[in-house]
Amino acid sequence: MASPWVITLMVIAGLLVAGSGYTAWQWDRRRPHGAAKLPSDIALERLEQARTFMHHSGGREFSIEVSSIVRDYIESRFRVLAAHRTTDEFLHDLLESADPLLAARRELLGDFLQSCDLAKFGGWNLPTLNMEAMLDGARRFVIESARTEVAKKPSLQSASAVERESYDSIPTT
Image (cartoon, rainbow, N blue to C red; front, side):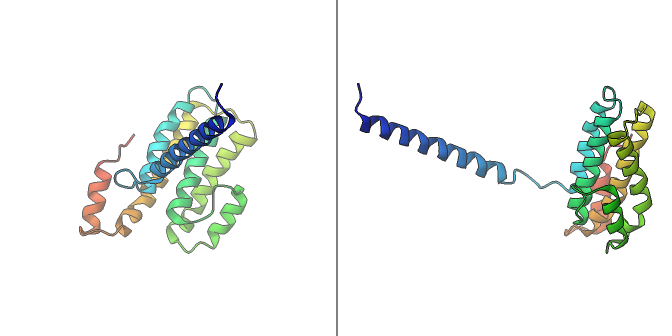
């Protein structure tokens, strides 16, 4: 049988190896891999993935997902706290928003988010046609607001060249 010191050293060595592996894994996860995606690109990808919720959820899970995507996009794109607030709190703050694009779409966003809330909290069962319309509205909002996102992105190319290049790759439905 091994002495207590040998067992203790083996345990310490195992903990050091595990800790080093965990630290390396965390560091690798945080390191950017490739070009950073714009918030609009991330939102459009997530909205496309949300289609999987359309056919089996009856509306609740779909509404939760689409609402979350739009709120996350607004938060990252416009630097407005949106994700963990009620729709009323969020819409109230849009009146005071310094970003005219976001403030101008307050009514559209309000209708969209309230429809999501009715399905999430009111138990509304949404037909696929309504879910398609919600998804289309979310996509339209992201694409329209992304035009200024691309134009503001620093580049050696002109803003219109960057916009043409970026939006030629966005799939349309």
